[in-house]
Amino acid sequence: MGPYANVVVNFDDYVYRSKQFVNIYRKGTTTPLAVYRYYGHGSRKVEIDPKYALKRGTWYTVAVTTEVTDGANNLAAAKTWAFKTK
Image (cartoon, rainbow, N blue to C red):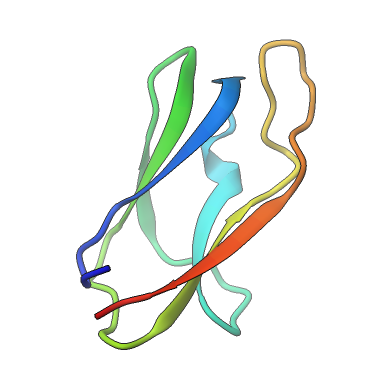
């Protein structure tokens, strides 16, 4: 991924008012990056776009917390994954 990559998280069900629970962290830190988040009402995806360029050659972690809910208030399992910029 390049320094200006967006991250799109797809869910099996629609998510509501949950976009703030999808974050990007520089690997090894606990402070989320400043991002823009997009999703449509009744959408199955959340797009997160870092406000600033990501540092080249650096690992980042995407975290989806258990506060993500669908219309029936079912909680999704927490999920994390990592990527490295080129």
